[in-house]
Length: 239
Image (cartoon, rainbow, N blue to C red; front, side, top):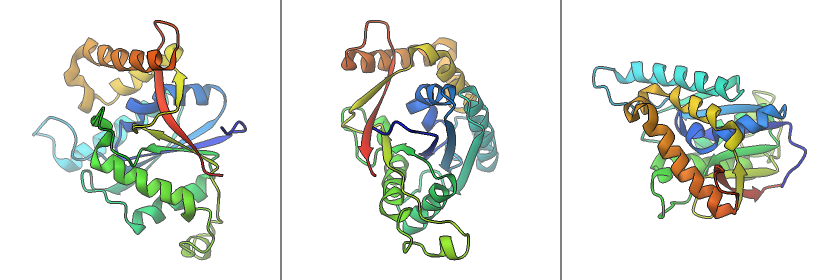
């Protein structure tokens, strides 16, 4: 696992994905002085529960919610690609768009959804998540590091090749790394409450109870002491 980490790029499909999967871990990183950048592939315009809100209005709302949630865990740089929610595919264009941001940010670690379906817990395996995971992993290897892949990124934008040495996958079927986030759970909860269009219907206590339930199970699987809460990842060496 990479130890000298100064910058981390988090690539997710929708606003709130990072907060459900990794906000506690992100809070720990920013507390250490690590710079974290968020890249959301869609604006989440297909989310929410209010028919009175137009899809354009929902997209604007969810961008604002993600920016507010990011501040809860110490992230200031939040970027959006504007792909249509619910219709993401792992295209060459998406690979290029993600590779561009990798070359801009030059991260030591990239966090992304797993491209694999998790049959034990289906919710992380939304088609957009898997498509973004596939495209982002291809953008890490080989696209961003290969100067001859998408040469227009260098020729037209001055973006030199960059090798991200490590990837952390969220929501996949083969986790191999658990992070104890008990001490920053309140900030993860605050981040998710910032996504009111997606979480307010769960009530004041429903969201917290749900989070504690599955995060306690994560901690138990890792052998952490009783009462601890954990987020889980599959860490891959991509150096």
